[in-house]
Length: 368
Image (tube, rainbow, N blue to C red; front, side, top):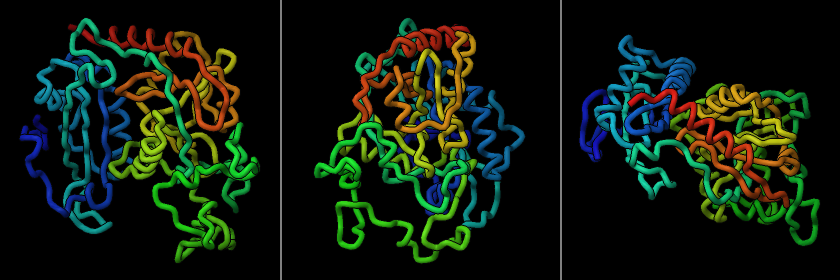
């Protein structure tokens, strides 16, 4: 295995940065996960647009030689324009310093991992190019440990939302359906509140210094929507913790909610749901990543004359949905069979049609 660091191809275990590295120290960088089909990058333009927007948001300068052709050529140094690959392109602010940077110039690192039958059914042969719908639907949990920042909703911003009440069907805790089930016990490490480990602590009260919210120090401030939530940052702790929850509870994925208690995304995917033939997904203002496959599906749905609505969704919306599926650049579209807290069992008719349309679009972008 090899890597490409600033244009130089090196062994994968080569030391490339010191402890002063800003991405390591502060998460001061971005990354893109890109799928290559027989060495081709059919959706690279979507990644490029998001990467450039992210660099602008972080105030990292774009060198004159950075271009789509430049990075595709740098990726080809590892793939030789052949084979099916999972590619990670990471760009971070170079130099040292503390929070205040010494420079805004970037560095980059490219990694490429070959995809084969052991990585979700993706085959090496060009004859098998394309995404495939998962044969077995996903079982998805709900992670309540960390919420993502979102835009104001006109609700009561002086107190946190009652996430528990939004669960359409509640697993009972001691027979009391008005209180949360043992989701709290699923947290890997639980800080006790008043000695009661059966209920979540008041994390807001534990902050040593509280930012004022309308003069009320007993309630959390309104952090609002952060534009950086829409990019893939090298600091991704909410997704790491949600993935821990997924692993600990045997789920295939977990949903994350935002600070308003509404749907945001999954650990590494955007979420869509279907009701009455119409497609819904949270708007970017809800704190989700601006997924490249999400953008591709918007284009596909338009071509298929399927209505798509960006909706501030609640967990109750999923209880009434006919289909739910997750999307990302590597795995394409994955349909969900069941979600924790709801008795609904979902189908995959539209998801199957959209996978076919996705592969048709991709074939039109690839030339051999």
